Amino acid sequence: MSEPLLFELGRPDRPSPRLPAPGVKTRPIDDLVPAALRRKSPLAIASLSEPEVARHFAR
Image (cartoon, rainbow, N blue to C red; front, side):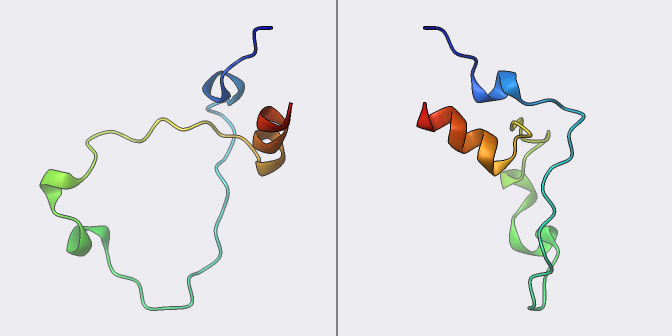
């Protein structure tokens, strides 16, 4: 049985989840991670909801 990968199920037009405010003082990423260690391009992750991911692995 062939099943699509999670990356194949996601769509780029779907918004990613919004996280609540952390409740603590935040610092810019530039202060925390040196430029040489930061990504040059965005991480390619699938835009799926938590239930979609759970269904994928629970089959």
